[in-house]
Structure formats: structure tokens, C-alpha cells
Length: 59
Image (tube, rainbow, N blue to C red; front, side, top):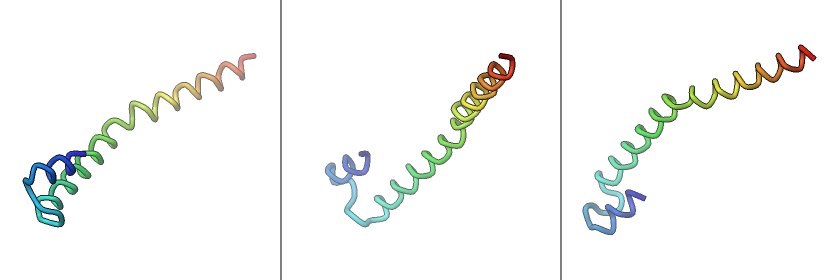
């Protein structure tokens, strides 16, 4: 989406270094955010599953 806005604002041309830098920057930012935020989702799911397993074994 940002790339589309920058292209239509004529800030850089298709295939230019600006477009490449935009893709690399947003790709790196998305990767960092995914790694940092993944524990919030992965460990909550794991904790919920362990709680459900504990509840079943107590029955």
C-alpha cells in the first residue's frame, strides 16, 4: 500500500532504488514485528492447551 502511494505521488519510479529500499524496509520491519509479537500469540495458545489438558485429566 505504501509503495502504491509513493509511486502515484511520483516520489520514485518503478524498479528504482527507492522502490527496492521501500520493499526491503517494510519486509524487515514486518519480520521484526512478527518475531517480537509472536510470543504473545504462541504462548497464550500453548498455555490454554495445557490448561484444557489439565482439566481433562482431573475429570
